[in-house]
Image 1 (cartoon, rainbow, N blue to C red):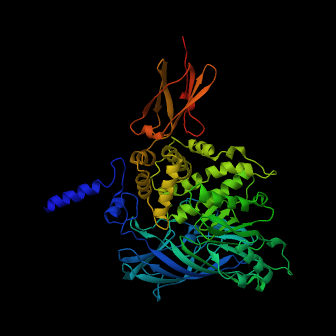
Image 2 (cartoon, one colour):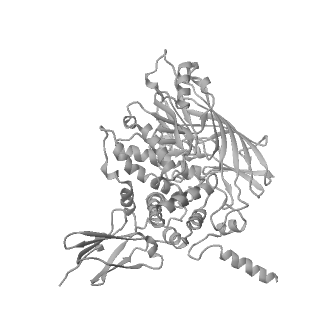
Image 3 (spheres, helix red, strand yellow):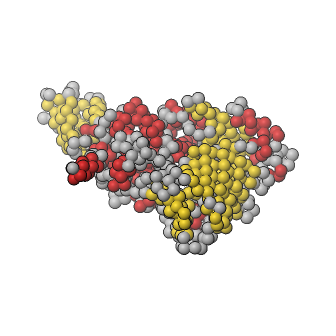
Length: 634
């Protein structure tokens, strides 16, 4: 009887997933343990850990030293006893000799995060003891007393570091303007799949954080030094002078825009109290990270706007005076995007109470904040703003492990706003500099995919992102994945795709979905077995290359054979030209590649066809030299 029962268990474990899919044993284990399910729902025993952060921080705008102290309450909601704690010390990225995949100059080397005090449950931790390991950007403390399942632990840290000009995705942009991210000792994730996340921050792979609560007090030291941050400002009346407090309150209430050009303020017209030596207190709940930005001479515009579903959000833009984005009314772009989120894709109201578009460098997302360069063209303003704000949903509202699977968030941030980006062309100001190469975002992404498709850098998307670099990472995380989502939408149909995506977000917001939770949710909710799709497009080598093999026309119609030479399933679009150059377009769904790499298309047509052309600007194909056949009639 015992042998029979064991055989049943083993067979049941194997049958959890289709044979079309590679499923790593850690995912199978999680399903067996009831944490996750084979239909994509969180299991009855799903769990995740979290923290409460109480932080006091000061940025010295003269020395550029950030100093802080924090108290963390860490909640071990797992079923496991924890014999160690892992804190992330991101600023150690800049220590000379560290392994990096983001180059920085010698002038940006530093001593990293200087920890002056660390206590666990009130007991001082000797940072030089054998129980403490500091490697890469992780600080690991072996515990004398294990943390039991369901127990809490208190951690207190005091630290400091010097803000640098060239730190990935944050830094100093002029003498008094900074974006501050990766700045506090942060609890690493302990989860059901990998245990402790020990991935180093090397500059490329980004977020994987637990959902936590933040109470952060930020002290400034200059007149009119403004602070924008994750969460909501709690003490505006203590920060602003009377005139500007009334205007700020009016903006929060949505009655009028709060607008101020800090560069034009004088001694008689001050924004902040006490010569700027004030404390800005922000609170944010259930978010995976906290960032803030500062400047004493930016243009600030703010108002509470509709976020969809009856919700409001405080929308802020903070840019250098004279920035092109101000000329292009980036506030209006962001406002329209919130409506698009709620009513088009993903069809979910913006979930947070604030959003700030800050003018720093590059393009980077944090919860409720984005860090954007100024832009030269209308299209780049729209693209950059919408891409970074789309990250609100992935990886923040959905707690994606971007460190392992960047395509689960970057691909969505490329794909979600494509329709918005294209349609926004008609709203361009009369004096805007235009970039027609980006006027059709969907077609532009197909071109971007083709640059590396079929090369040695074209790696299956399920390959862990933290194992990829350079072109392989970018190709997989951004362009290829966005194109695959587009193919998926075309296959399922616009309405079904939208409904399934919303259900995926509904199931997994505030949690940690894996690729298999994504795969299984889409199969479950769509009512279609999509394992063949996940297997071919996420787990196998292949690229988009269709070939027009043959065309036969007779009195019964036309028969066209198309070969999938690259192995990657993509839609088929055929244009049939008759002798009068009339065009008949035939489309076939990508699902027709399910059973093989040859597709025979039979259609009834009127008149004689003289030419058949395969492809369109929305269907990728690495080799278009075999996409046209002329028919000679005798």
